[in-house]
Image (cartoon, rainbow, N blue to C red; front, side):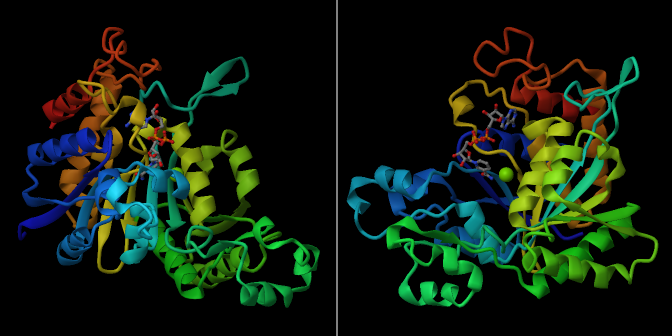
Length: 393
Ligand code: NAI
Ligand code: MG
């Protein structure tokens, strides 16, 4: 196997320590790679007016494989107020660099596995009869990553031709008299090609890993055109996968059922917004943000990241106390992607053992309040959790 080059983008806050720990684990499992650092995040917005510098795009274009930590993101106005004085009022507009990255490289598939580890004190527990039961969840969410409500086609005070176009729809009549600044429109755009690709990839994944069902989680009874298109394509594709059931749920009902029968679901497909919601929902059943890992996969490039953010509350804590497992599991997804599946499995097994042994636990696993006191209360540091993973390899 040729030596890989991986672009590392630690970003902001806790993205930095967790990415460093993931690299230690990759080293320990014998994965040989060259790592090239790439800039992304808040300081590049403040100092350059661009949180996702051109040089970072260039590196990813060249090497096509990236590990990303987390970034700090703020609303447009707040970001504008914090840009360095020299760049103020020069026309710079803030955009989330991770959303930008997904769109720039058309990383249209977001895959978020949510699997319980045995012995994780954060696992979901359900009442049964006089006692409790702990269903093992093994769900993989396929979230469309580049379209839908996050595509960014939106206006406050839409220009006249947009208003005019909206006016051609009879349901717009109720809004026709709303004055300029009082009207905000965010569009939800789906394309057939992207719908088809994500459902096909989801079915392929289900087939490869032995999942019995693919569930489309949308809202086709109300959002008929876009949710409807995804469902339509799913029905078409399902015909090519005879052994796998196609199910359909509504996002709201799915969130309610989450705690009823999460173990019944296998692969779930949703648009950008609902995929974001349902994946957080399932992640909550298997340990939350400290465990939530993900892959952003396009045809030419793939970036792997924990789904948590930069956790500014904890970024100044030294030593860091956040859970590195979400980032380490994300790097396992990278290993799977480049067919280093044995190494990925070795890491996952060793994480499973650390959790089952229960001796080394970060503050979240101990259900402590995060903060400087956590270590005194018995929580392991970020580094100690990693050390324990490495010791099992
Ligand atoms: P967050 O994910 O950064 O943190 C929320 C809370 O979750 C933390 O305060 C902490 O209690 C817990 N947490 C997060 N990661 C953890 C870990 N590895 N181990 C243990 N506990 C962990 O979300 P928040 O506070 O909403 O956003 C903070 C910043 O991060 C914002 O600027 C936001 O825009 C950005 N963000 C970036 C994301 C990304 O880079 N992909 C995703 C989500 C938020
Ligand atoms: Mg999210």
